[in-house]
Length: 336
Image (cartoon, one colour):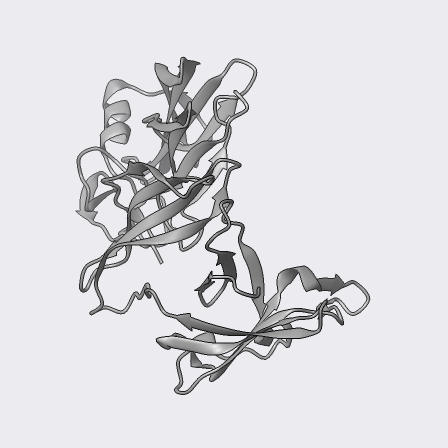
């Protein structure tokens, strides 16, 4: 820690530090002391801050609780006022193995605030997931009276911190340090990029925007559907969309479209779509007719039956409406 220039990332649920000179941008995870003591008030209201090195914490199965090693290392900051996010944090790093203390002074670079009147443009937040060659930042913006939006993802070369690609013109939800994850979706041994579209639990199913790693360049796949399944045996991908509605007898019906893709030369090519229509109450099912297929394909559909106004899956045409009992009604987005 001595003579290092570090960046400390803090949120109410996660903390870690990064050595700015570390080309791998390794994230050193920290734990709030109040979490370990099971005595946390609001983290942002604390007048002191102690962050333990997560490597020095273990789970005691006998006591069924996390515990600290005797030689634990930690940050300690004392500050005035009732907010954790002061402009300056002054304290020290205690190295438990060397039994030595190092002074630390940190200056706040930015704050990602979701207060209604706050606004900011294109702030970059380091993401938790990275590969051997690349690390990623979420590009975030917020307008007054609106929610924080993920508007882009930047890709950096680990060896020299060089920005090598900007993925732009996104309009997805804010997921803190977890806006992306990496997965080999074309089974070539290289990790590909998946960008999370919505906040956790805001939609049924997994909804990601996938980009294939083509020799260090991440190329959009334009795969369609939720819960996309990648099959290594035939290098296929299958996405689906579920559309709930009621028939003339007020029985619940479900239309499911599946879109099947085959992989060729860094691209997933759509081979065919299929559609099944099911009466949930009678359990009868059949192939969709053309009207049912088009209605499911084009409409934004309600998939939260307790609140028919809750917008579910994306569609092509009607961005602010939901389809309910054969007609459109005003929709709301729940991305909390």
